[in-house]
Length: 287
Image 1: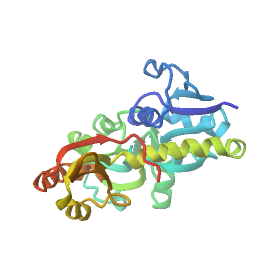
Image 2: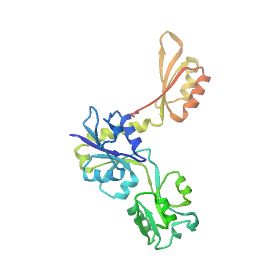
Image 3: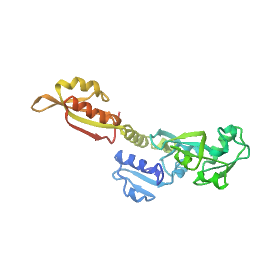
């Protein structure tokens, strides 16, 4: 039975989602053409490329079995889907922002009757209702940051990552409604009937995420420096040490290291007399 997977066709989550699937070993046919459907070579998988905002609905209705989208979109939709894995990309926050000149420093400073422009009307209404504020929501599809300057709204609720867009538009963040990242969601019925296939795919995705900040290091190390290398590069379960044919003074050391430690690792190994140092990326790392 074909496993149907939905990924964003464009936007902040699209490229990394497709990259993860490819690193997991799934060869998507014609993925660069962004067709609505694409098959996966040698697998009974079908990939659908759709708007990230529509993926929650598609998964909820069973049009697809599993999807990658933003947690913010899952919260906004409020539909019946099961979140099975948090991905380490697409990090942002849904925030309330007001003009710098408004005098608003906190939600309590917002006047009743204020107009809020957002593409997240459900989360916005719930947040302000809980805060005891009566506001009017204007639903827009994009460019919320310009609405206070053209008289459409008094303030906005929008996704923020670095905050640079707010600064450029003379807006300031006054409250955070929710924090978001990419998530893997599944249809409840599909999870019962295709549990094994879904778990295998999620495990493959997780293994790519595990490898994202790791590198595989190989080096020829003098035996006299081996103990120092063991202490400096402990690896996951210790470095792998192999004899080199015809050499008693040098061994081959293989170890997994954190990506941000690669520069210092090479410098330290050179000082210890290591040669033939090679660092390569890792596509997947299965515990």
